[in-house]
Image (cartoon, rainbow, N blue to C red; front, side):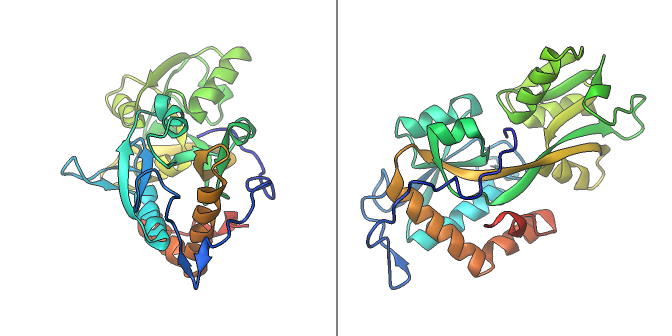
Length: 269
């Protein structure tokens, strides 16, 4: 959910291989996680299709949920999700509330300085979403001038719209804790447009009976798994498991299942 950064060769720079992390193809994970035998994953579970609750309101589902389960299985660990508000999610990994964050985290230069990251695992971008038949038809961020623009606070969308405002663009900012609320406001006519991640935009526009349309998509971003700075052992183990999921086709199958297309292979370096 942050600005694009080309991280080829940078994400794992300085990391050293942990002796014995893999033995005979099986992960050795004793002592790698906060809770023995369990991978604690920080998520903001309200960001479809990446991480959200099923209709029962309690079961996490989505792309990041499926992928993190597969990742934990490769590591030989059970998995537990820690549902965390986005504005506190990074503090949580630093203070040991969970082992890693897997919650549509965009890799940025700023974050690379403060955290460890896996290599990117999916492509993303920013998008503008309107209601079909909307009387306003912006086809760029600049054309959002004078409109009521909804987006999730503390995200890339927030950053971009803040930059646009600082550059002189005048619009009414409607910030919400969850992206779901932004779509509700657009549906109810209380917002003119939404700026959000393209993975989210494509999910909403693909739903049966929806009245949303994507009218603009920006340049690419890359999402990664975020860990505490200096947690070399777990970072190396996680990257090894992620590489295995690419090699055996698991992550591609998850992408096809959630998005109907392969959004993951192009970012695997």
